[in-house]
Image 1 (tube, one colour):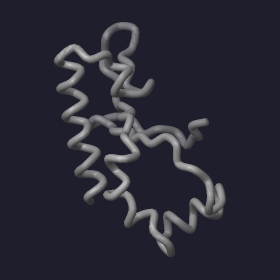
Image 2: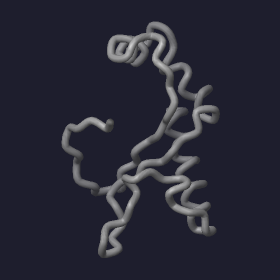
Image 3: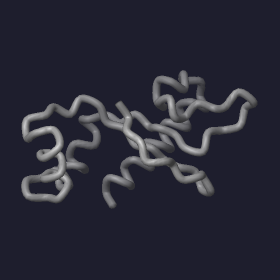
Image 4: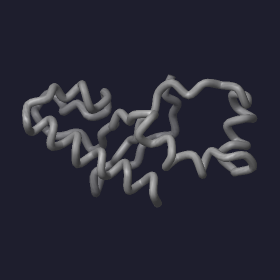
Length: 102
């Protein structure tokens, strides 16, 4: 719950920054792009600061947690975390097909 709260706080700050004139690409990833006819995308990718969310995410990534065990099995216990983002869907957005982001 704490991580979700922090992500939504950052979303509000990012929206305010864009409204104030900040380049959209500085705070949102490619999933936020509007389509060619100006309709807002049904979801956005918010770039997150590793430092800002480290303390909030730490409990979920701690030793013995399900997420830590999954990550260790997939990428090993020493894999670096170098990028972090959250995809936020708007109400009524269609479901995404199962896919990977590489």
